[in-house]
Image 1 (tube, rainbow, N blue to C red):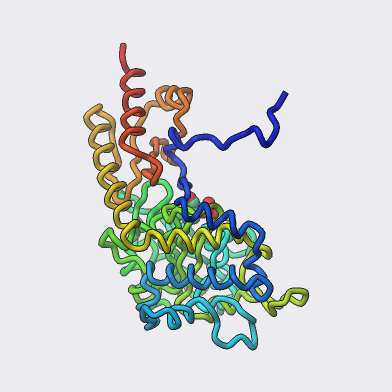
Image 2 (cartoon, rainbow, N blue to C red):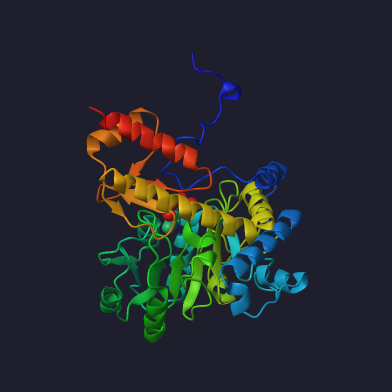
Length: 384
Ligand code: PLP
């Protein structure tokens, strides 16, 4: 007989090497529990969670360079304005520059939706590198836009010439990836932004996974790059919030206005999010995690994870396995199919890229101890 729900526990993260989710920070866990029943989708009724959402958006704005780009300084009152629309006449209390979504897929779908709503073409097209997350395929399907994917270069980054060749009068949005799902690659965002500006279309940056590493990695990726108009960054991944807490940010509030619909039965007059009722746990935990960890905690995690990824890559190479050089803390490497299946049999949760490499994401729960144990298993399986 099945154990009851109360008797069951989530699986341990000890052997989870492929996921982009992780253990929430303890403060995020506590905040999530406190706000389990609050609905940020109705901010006029649930005022405290609405306030926490504004704080979370303000933190995301700092992390992504949006606060600097729109000229908001560090004081709390000014910071508050970044997360809430000052003029509430038309759309109610919606966020001016962003909101906490239910994950990267919602953010990407909404970025495409906003671009479609503002497009001049009757047959809008989104241009994205083939490395873009599958949520863009969902977006194209539900929104009835064409997704034009273009090849990446040999290193797995968007090929700027290929992107340029794909842009025509129907293009409503160009997408760049800052931390690709399969290889952790960062596209040449300044060059793609220049191209988008020249074409008169917005650039959306998908930093769902990479966004909490990139402030420390030296890449040009956020709103400090002219032409970046919308951006996805997920607190529930490297940000250590509880699931589901994504983030969508926009340089210009009109990008979010384009998403707002009237909401007659709520206390709030309109809603820009894709989902109606949203997770108060996600929002509160995002605010709490960023409060605790931005910037020092995230910097320390970037440094720890990068060193660990470099060490792991070297260990794999010393076992004569081909490794894709990590750019952010994600290691893809060739592993014979039989070995891949055998390590999975031993409980390791790893996944494969489309091209067949094994893939390990060095998330906050992944330690030197767990990677050493994984390598021991590889050695054991390889032993004659
Ligand atoms: N974008 C990127 C780059 C991702 O890696 C992912 C998920 O791994 C997503 C978007 C989708 O995020 P979610 O699963 O939270 O919807």
